[in-house]
Amino acid sequence: MENRVQENAELSTSEIAKRQQAEWKAAMKGKNAFKRNQMIFVWGWLALPIISWAVFYWYLNFSSFVGAFQDPITNDWSMINFQNIWNELWSSKSLGSLGVGFENTFKYFFLEILVKYPLQLVVCYFLYKQIHGYKIFRFILYLPAILPGVALATVFKEMVASNGVLAMLGFAIPPQGLLGTPDTATNTILVYSAWTGICGHMLLLCGAMNRVPLEVLEAARLDGIGPFGEFIHLILPMIWPTLSTLLTLTCCSFLNSSGPILLLAADTYSLRSTTISYWIFEKVYANGVNGLGQYNLVSAAGMLLSVVAVPSVLLIRKLFDLLPSVEY
Amino acid sequence: MLKIKRKVNDVNFIFQKKTKGEMVLHGIMIGVLALWCFTFLFPLVWLLVQSFHDRNAYWITLTLEGKFTLPDVWHLENYIDAFTILNYNHTNFFGMLFNSLWFIAIAETWCLFWPIMVGYIFAKYNWRGKALFHSVIIFTLTVPIMGTTGAMFKLVDALNLYDTGPIFVIVTGVGGFGSGFLVYLGIFKGISWSYAESVFIDGGGNTTAFFAVMLPQAMPAISAMMVSSLITHWNEYYQFLMYLPSWPTVATGLYSISIQNTIQKPLYYAGLIISIIPVFILYGLMAEKMMKNLSIGGLKG
Image (cartoon, one colour):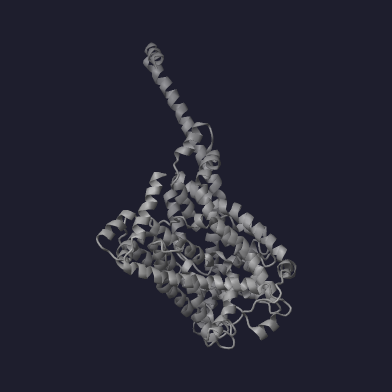
């Protein structure tokens, strides 16, 4: 440092300025090189995901939009897909129409909101309160999320068959079983969804409850709050950020609400048990024969459904944002 | 250590001090949950027992003795024969297992890498237009655009990806802007940038900083995600049913076999038990890690 001061003193002002400028340039060059390397890194690694996103999201949606207006045979511009959708909406129930799909989809949505969420919250609350054996309960209750759906569905099918466990317990089961009878198939799948749905958001809700500060609970305890009051006035408001996010995501996909129809009833009465998402699957899958799917019809249905869903979702998000959240 | 001990004591103090009413309530809840757990365990035990029945005489057993009998002779060979006899689309159980394994290997490395990298870049680097880019991603994640399955099918066909096995998974698996983006963004936002800066001071570049320092720092959180995604991938059947019919995985194959009328049920049940074992072991080993304070961020912004 001393040397530098001495050196500077010996130099003329213009020389000092020149040297400072050179140092600044070198620093900037280094900084620019650093910045340039960063940008090479960023765009180098983002390139492939962006190309994939452009093709499998943006082009896909554009192509779906165009397909909705194309005749499935001639590929000419046409409104035929929308006419067919209109007919589908009002066609006979036994044909597995889109109208039936709408009806069942709302059943699954309300089951999710009115049954599965409250059940999960209550169960998580008691697990959080560390009731005896809570670790074992938590382990077993999460099993449906872990086990292959086909295994659980197979066992359930056997249980509700005409000679299954329910029949042995004295329930009146129709000869074709609960899943094989059109009138009971959907309700049986709804029961299955509620039965296994306990683990849907269990990890996230339990995680949110575990982060509630103990001091708050302790203070409430001293004020003589009971378990019900604690759940309603303390736990629920404090896990609201997590709960509201989950509710928003559920509401965002309300038209996708469905049950495991393919696993449980595809071989029997899926036509009466269909939901919107299962209807879409059936039209595209076409019994596994490649090229026979009604792709443009599905695109038209998707477009109409999106027109309904997008404003609803934006409104729901706005409503949830209006509710105050607790910060801690 | 002391702090943790104190916290555990606090928890016990608060949770174990119960009123009479609470004790009754907890008792009722224990009964309800025990019953619920029983309804999950009983079918699995039933499945296990049925898988040992004589497969050739199973329908006679069903007719004469009903569905809830123990086998007279426990046919362990069902488990060996399941590997060769269970067959779908000219693929036996070994083939299905092989398909499941390559799918998991690609999904857990190649497909998982991209959302991690995209999350990292958005969490740690700045560039002009990043905020807008981020908003567009959030918009695409929350706005439900439906019915693209038909267009996807046409696109897969146009790109000659239909029924191409690993090629399909590799090409369609380059993600990064799906729901995983939010998770990895959150994970990397929680890791200090000073670790990377120390790499730069030592002369390392951005790639070294990511692979040598930042990725290992995020590994505990990423590994928890990997466990749950591994289980999801093992149970995946939809993608293979739709786009890769000649490459059935264990889940797809078992589903397709289940709808065949000629199926020998004990053999099929043995196949189901085999499909359960790996995920059950993994879950048993990693349950505590998976249950630990998993959280989700808000969607504002």
